[in-house]
Length: 252
Image 1 (cartoon, rainbow, N blue to C red):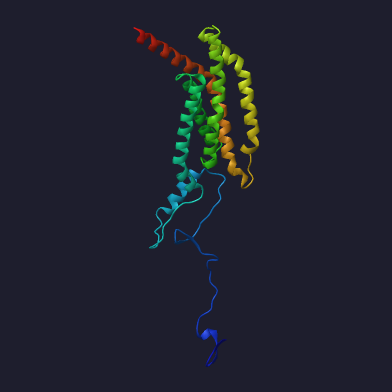
Image 2 (image 1 turned 180 degrees about the vertical axis):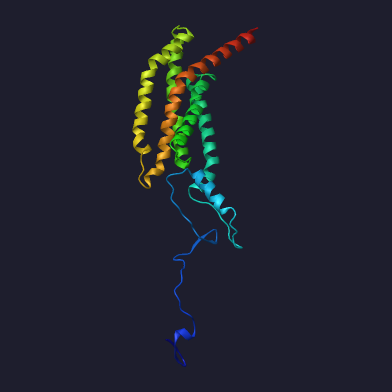
């Protein structure tokens, strides 16, 4: 009963009482009420999940005032991709400037930086083979990889430069560089990849989010290292021969 000046009044005479489903909390974003629909996915890439959602919800008519938007990993990918690309380009420029100062040459840094796109190819292959999503941790792994994979190229180019300075022929210098540096390069790469295996194979809920980071870094390092042993000496030869030819033409 509700007490009034005229006496108690039963509540049922003023309002109907019934139990109905309702919101336990009201969420708002950008001054608008929101309804969050969440899901957890482990078996499919985020791009496949988004394609399936868009296919199923694309033809669903929404009432007036309602709209559909994506958040979480999908929103992170859309927002972070331009920034990551800028970070990669800035990193490439800084590495180029640093290597130019170390080697005192405009040409020598180029065969060293060739390792980065090779490693990127390996990272993408690794994510595709293991069915891991291209997410923010994977991008962080690729950024981390850019600073690691060039070390092997630096070892090779530095050895070749020292051998040429000592009077060794160019082809022999490259052969010696690959043969003598092969074992330490492979040992360093394999030990790094083995150290990443626990993170790559992690499947615990919450922790598996970092698995794409290790996957991108490990596969990129593996492919980048193997390809570097072949591509870096070849690129060095082509650029050196082109530079020598240009100098001869300028003299004439």
